[in-house]
Length: 296
Ligand code: NDP
Image (cartoon, helix red, strand yellow):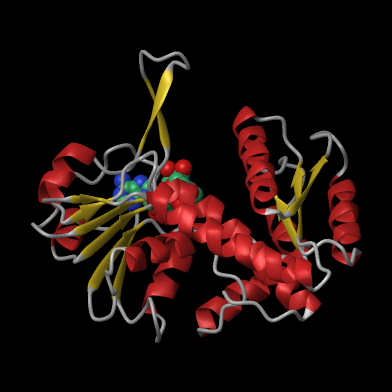
């Protein structure tokens, strides 16, 4: 019997833990605060920001919603982030992706103070993660790690194949699973668009994580019986629905489920975890900046 891993339920547990930490911080006179900065007019980004704001409010984190004109000069964004870095009442800062073409991506990643970089993408934080001493684990990879933990799947000694090498999912996840210590110690293979014979890799995996952006790329034929399958992909495909599309993952769910021991659905798998781990990182930032010990 295949387990369909319920990301909403695991995310609810994380949110409960975060709420308890918010209480500890509040008792110490600290209101954790996340500032999101949006500098594009894409509907999807607007939706993501609104969800993050709502998530914060639900667990007692103060949320600040900063909007900038996508045509404004790049310096306006950097000045805004610099002001947020300087503010004592702001603990987490997130610049919503994508920023306009005239704003250099690398500079955006470096602009947020590493102590408030709740996405975990600042070069200093990337370095710490690779070195095995993460300050903030990036939200999606951390969410995947938590999902495995919730299912009692210890990656130690297992063959884990991560499909995708992006800097927001594939690479940090591979690093987390590789590290010594809890939630790590896996033997990790990272595949990408230049990998020869992807199926040869996925077939020998105990755990396959797909983070690609190609609907249904990984199917049951590419898996061995008993594999754990984590589908990070969120892809819109045309469908006869009110919105004109539906969301699917990078895994062909039905054929993969027939082989898998455990599998995440899309939606309702990794997505809710990414949102929950942002809250986790925000209270972590607040506790460290304010020097209030919390149970995380
Ligand atoms: P990127 O586009 O940044 O990276 C995709 C990766 O997949 C690249 O490394 C690319 O290889 C690789 N790839 C592309 N095609 C193939 C192929 N045919 N075979 C093997 N590898 C391939 O994507 P992201 O990592 O940002 O996102 C991946 C997916 O996850 C998307 O669907 C995205 O929407 C979703 N996502 C979901 C989140 C969640 O919360 N659930 C959060 C973030 C992303 P190469 O490097 O060679 O180009």
